[in-house]
Length: 277
Image 1 (cartoon, helix red, strand yellow):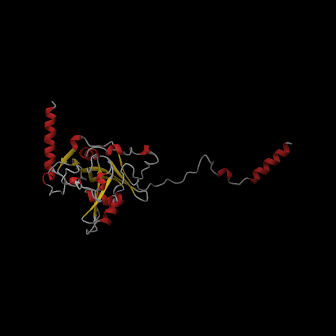
Image 2: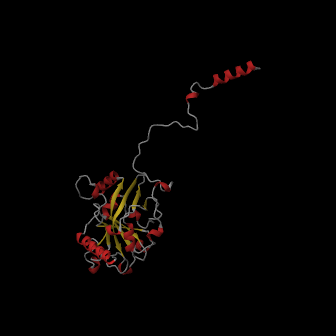
Image 3: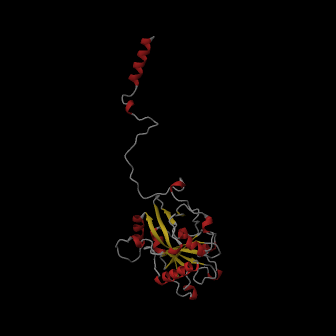
């Protein structure tokens, strides 16, 4: 009987593949060479712990002035069709107050196919075209016809892709490379760098899978926020001077710096500080 068992054992060894001992166990998969990571990709939708939480509808449901300030420091994320993600920290915004605001597209409360997004729920994107070739992106806020224009970003990720998009979409300019500080330093530049066009109009920023906002722990302090006049609305009387543009002081990515407004803001902050003592 012992000899029979020995013969069976020998037969089983002969039937086994000669390199079986070298094959990895199913529980211990063979490791390949290190993978080189491509453009930064968010896995927010599959693993929220890897990135700051996405800002939801409640964030956008506040008056335009408060929302314009709350946007500062938050991170805008654009996912392209190939999965590449472009990221930028918001450093400049403008508030548009609705029907009473002579500079708003919704002045007088008029609704048109173009501005319908301004009257939709907070967080709705309002994208319009200017000069027949450039896009600007706004986000509706609390109040009919009120919204916030996103004016400038500090590029954080995907800069080379942004540069390629800006270069390919620029009109009538030289072939020189776009500098980092020029990538998103203006509302139309921002849209070019993130490949934002009219197809984004009426999308929900709280739900869209190609564009969203993430909370940043690096928001500016109150003293770092400058309130200045809006840009390019010179024919709107007193509304042209109202301090409804907000930007982060000393940020090199801001589109237009207003030194006079910065000095006035410092004086007001100093006066408030003195009053509290």
